[in-house]
Structures are given as structure tokens and as C-alpha cells.
Image 1 (cartoon, rainbow, N blue to C red):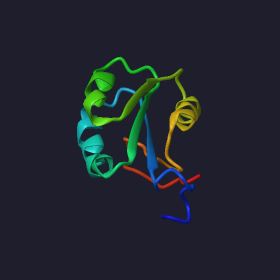
Image 2: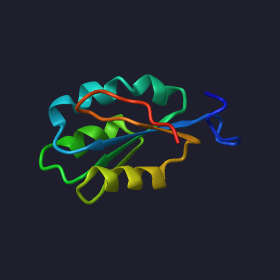
Image 3: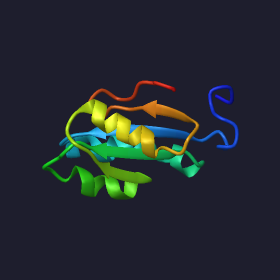
Image 4: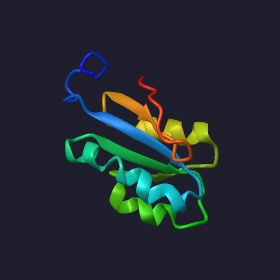
Length: 102
């Protein structure tokens, strides 16, 4: 991972998670990312207009909760702009997580 991360960021990874009305799976999926937070990586949830309790549930489980216009691209772009890690990992709640480092 050291080759992917930028110098000066301490090897920090930003996990960007887009969300839309996913309260039913949010706690379990974000809960699985808590070990990463404990060692200094960040979890950013970007909500695209949920009408359920997604935003409220995410608060204690994410380092940053953002609201964006609807649409996965808008959500990911906002998360990427706010991310502080040298590497970013795109996660989706509906089908688990897939690596997308850039």
C-alpha cells in the first residue's frame, strides 16, 4: 500500500461510501470499517438525498458525513474533494466494497 499512498499523508486511506436510503444495511457495513478508523484511516459517507435514517445512523460511524445532489458521480466527486488520504477506496453499501484506488 505504501507505493499507492502519497508521501506526507502517513499512508492514510480514505474510504468513500455513497449512500441513498440504505439505513437497513448501513450500520453493519460501516461497522465493518471501524477497525480502519481506529488505525487512522478515514471513512466518508456521501448521502445523495436519503429520506430514511441513513444520515443520522452514519454520524457516529463515519469521520465525515456529506450531503450531495443525487447521483453516484456527484457523490463520489464530492467525497474525493473532501478526502484527506493519499489513496481513496470507493465502497458501495449495496454490494460490499470494491477497491478503486486513485
